[in-house]
Amino acid sequence: MTSSGKKFEFEYVIGTNPECIEEREKKTAEEVAKSYDEWVEKKLYEVDMEARGYYGPQLTADTAALMFPDNREKVRIVDMAAGTGLISIKLREHGFEQIDAVDPSKVSKKVAMEKNLYGRYLVDFVDERRLDIKTDEYDGLVSSAAFTPGSMPSIALKEFIRVVKPGGYACFSTPEYVLRLSTELRDNFEPLMEKYEKEGAWKRILKAVVPSYFDNKLGVLYVFRILKSEI
Image (cartoon, rainbow, N blue to C red):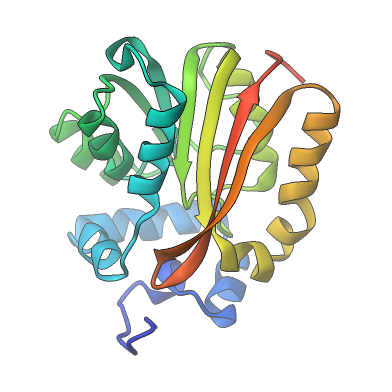
């Protein structure tokens, strides 16, 4: 339910209360991906996200633009858990042109590719497995609100590091409430970030808590500079 009291059909996917988080944590990744397919198929996803004041794509794209101030048309970016392409729209406003995507939702891919928002769109989950992407393939990585129960686990951070070349940047954001309410994220998300930094895989450039990220709730923005190809 929104801060205004409005309830949505796909509330368990979008909801910000503890009950919704708990319900999502009981779902498999495949079940959550199926819900996204249905959500997008009904043409409700982008409408609902706009109604909830979803600022994540704008914030993340603006941050990527700060990291890559020059020759953005030549910068290769991968959008993890890309959905229907909300970040790509904002990236293109900054002059980025070479943008690929990864997301398990086939319906989201169809919508995004019909809008010519991505070059390659890999339909897959981002987790502990090695994606069909070459090591050091990209100059930068973006992701918004992907680290939520049933969508992307904390261990996916390792793959973030692998696919971005040393010297590149990973810019990603997430709702603050999931970091408090999700057991998996609370226990593993920032501890893994710190572990990989101690191992010399990346260096944190920025962590910022931002207002009105989603449904008038706080968000957290991270920027890391990649230092190693593999962990």
